[in-house]
Length: 448
Ligand code: UD1
Ligand code: CA
Picture 1 (cartoon, rainbow, N blue to C red):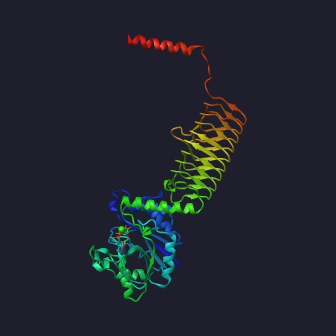
Picture 2 (picture 1 turned 30 degrees about the horizontal axis):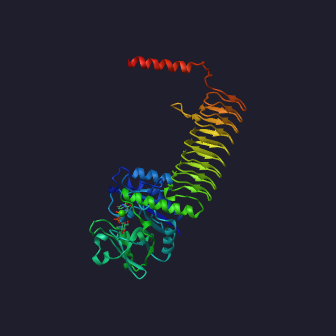
Picture 3 (picture 1 turned 60 degrees about the vertical axis):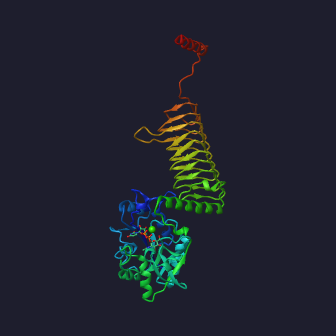
């Protein structure tokens, strides 16, 4: 069965109080729209159509950055969800599969729920994703007769009896094409808000003798975001879900509620993630690694047996081979650290390759930026870098070489050499005591 997704993302989202289009606000480091697209991707859709309106250029850029094949259709006036889907009519002319309508502001929808929706459509014309609402509020109500869906009534148009119904419309539905567009031709905007309701197609289908069904999911999954409060709620739900998944997959987290994950965080089993660790996008942690408390990771790959932190920062392009140790107050950016390398204290390592087993002393800094361009540092296998070494890149240090503490390294160091790049020390006999006496005398003279 071929599937076309239509993702509604034209709304302004006034209640977000934002210049950013609502669907581009992020949950777990990914725009809500991307969450919706990813859920849809699990169905392996033939087409992915995004209905954009407010901030359409930005919405298009995000959608196509995630999926180059995403088709953007502009709905310049937002006249309702039915009108929004109608915009895809020409694009889907001749399409005979199933259309799945998703909302760009409903980011928690699960792949397995969409799978059961797309299975259930096989013997019906429309399949609507519904949920039992704790507080049905302003949701559309699903009016059923036994197992069959008869129609959907919007809250604003519902009778008192209909308002008592707690089975609500999530907004997500599967509809057979081309029937969808035939039904859309029949709907009007004669209702309280003068909008074209997508939900009206159900009654139209039933009037034709078609079967419509409801597939149920949890209320959480259909959480729609209309405000920053709801954005924070959705974030929490997402985090809770992912943390539980990780725990089930054999990851140790002594305080899971303090760990912040990104939408794409991958963590191998038997890894430990300590308290207050934050994952930005693009992090992979392999089996048996340990990320200690208060570390921040983004765009990084951590191999088996590594220990990172506490208080470490891995920035994009940090690539740690097996058994690498990164200690407190160390920042790593765009650098490859080979097996067993150690950077244990107070360092910045950027645009660098560090050879296997090399030991980088406390306070070492790679000076990679000259104000205009970035330059690379290369440190050989088994090198021993003295504390507080400054590498003025581009520069390289050969294998088994050493640098003396406090050195400023501006020239390459051949393999096996010791580089000392600091002023020579001189000791002035008794001068400290003499100087101190003199200074105290000056102070006393001033007071008198
Ligand atoms: C809709 C449903 C309601 C359901 C609820 C679930 C209709 C008529 N009602 O109501 O039954 O319970 O969702 O959250 O479908 N959009 C466009 N273009 C438009 C109008 C809307 O792209 O012209 C987008 C919005 O940006 C939003 C989504 O469609 O992402 C839903 O629209 P919204 O106006 O929020 O619908 P509700 O009134 O919440
Ligand atoms: Ca809504």
